Image (cartoon, rainbow, N blue to C red; front, side, top):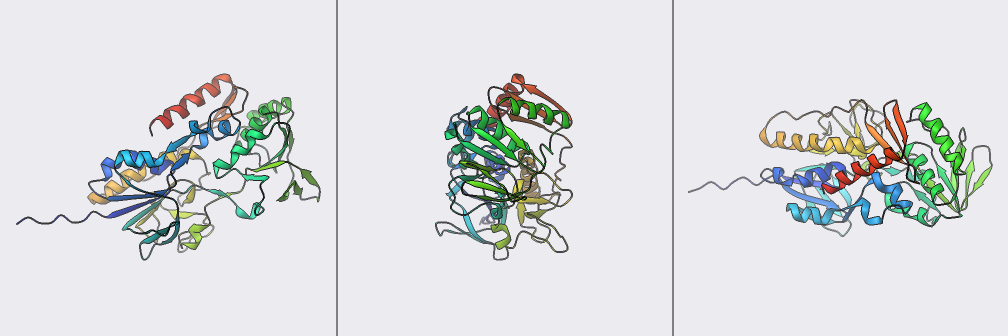
Length: 359
């Protein structure tokens, strides 16, 4: 008489961001220990190529991963769509087509969204920087008035791309390039000015409305298209699911996680990327953390299955980021070191192609 093997714990992956794509790619390592189910849309849109796709420099297909095909190749059950309800106590979830899923562990990798409070409802001429699919509207911006709200790396990159599409671009922000070295910001300002971009910093954006953006002094800046590239927050459904907080922790935006990427109050809940609030230290919402948390998430799940201690995510002090400035030029930044030119963009294209080719 042989013993029946114990059923594998059910691991539900919610969302297909950078970290979960790594888990999918390494599903063969997880399969002996977990019964995997993924709930995510078919396509993952890669942020590294978003502005080039929006500007028409790259085809739309160049910056996306077929999640359904990857799951099929790796033998992972994939439910196309989104989770609309999740109960961490009951360990159950429901998708947008009504499918119920039960789990023993759940991992969330849902990215971030622009704060809904900044966006008017049902306004076709106002596009948030997330989700990335909306940025395709920039392709039709030739000769149109485009306002870019926010002047961090994403806003400046999109402003440069829109200007390369011959749009009339105005950047509205409190501060320009706060996440970039000061000398790089000065170079970028000159580059934008040479393309006719008007950068208005030190302004307060009070409201983005159809046809115009209202500033704190009461004046309005008219637009045919406004791109909101500021105010990224964790998806609001996390609060509804009771996951956007932890006992004794204030100021949490997203799923609070320890260095092991687990929720302190719900050890069967894991999270990575922009939807996670990393408790050991604040992290900016940039893709490098989701990418680097993928291997930590994988090793943590394997350690849990084997009864060992999980690894800790140690954020890098510096990382390379390359902005696509359109017209064949890029701006590469690592810490306070930077360079601008065609070689920077060639480096970016190589990095992006190599990452996408994995999936």
